[in-house]
Image 1 (cartoon, rainbow, N blue to C red):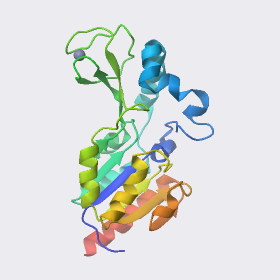
Image 2: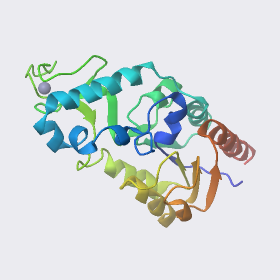
Image 3: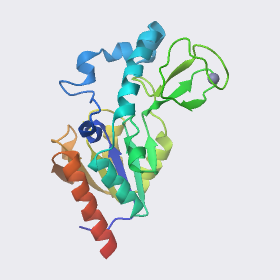
Image 4: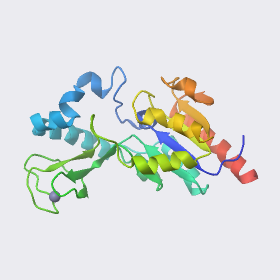
Length: 237
Ligand SMILES: [Zn+2]
């Protein structure tokens, strides 16, 4: 393997699945049980905010219980032992942070955070939210929402993401379905910048043919193994 200096890693639900975080698009995933239009759109929130709060209260409680797995830990180990790693995650859980990663972009927001639609302040949040919750900053009641990006909303930090994709020489996609834009387009952006592109996934994603290299298997196996390859090439360079 070649040695790489600027590594961008895109992570999705498949990374956290082995920690017990429910995935969204699998046959047993969350969207098999809930209609995303009701619980994950601005329109659904406007129509029935309390129902949306209850959905995310349940998600928040489950996120508070899970622990990072060997794949999260391997990525934190990579960052600690390699100077140029950025993780872009589609996951709203806090498992990258719990594993020790710091160079992290939450493009779809964070489940353990709340956003005030009135004053735009963000707050770490572990309790339940309701339509009666007051914003700790501006004190307005009823303007708090989960700090997650809903369908129809623009993902966070897109300019910063374009910047790191333009500059990377290795792009790795881990545990993503490859059918949710804009993240599904990142591999093309990285390739246009000349990066080597790798897919690590349980099975070929919808965008599998766009990658130059692919390794399939559980994230807790394929991610630590790939991280070791990167670090040994980096240290021998
Ligand atoms: Zn506020």
